[in-house]
Length: 152
Image (cartoon, rainbow, N blue to C red):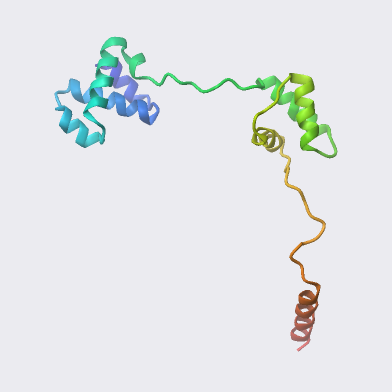
């Protein structure tokens, strides 16, 4: 019970916390139906995690998935950031080629490349030389009206 209390106090992931609370409440004598109503879980959920805790302890109610391994390690990400910061201009296809040549990495999504730009403090958004919605006649009219109002 002490191990369970320490785990709850360690502020685990909310999913783990709900599992631990369900187990603790069972051990404190709450009925499954009372626990179900308090935690808004199913009776099967309570039973499953109680059994997992009895079989494996805290490890039984802990999340097993830890995420996928990054394609680039921290040193490689730092090297890419340095490479990007040395450049005067940036190009997505150039970054893609550099990663493939240097690290044999090809991301499935362009978002991963955009994240590298962002981490290096670079905006990858394309700029436009002019506003495509600009109406020269409307601008002239507004300028004329502004000048008339400003001179009054």
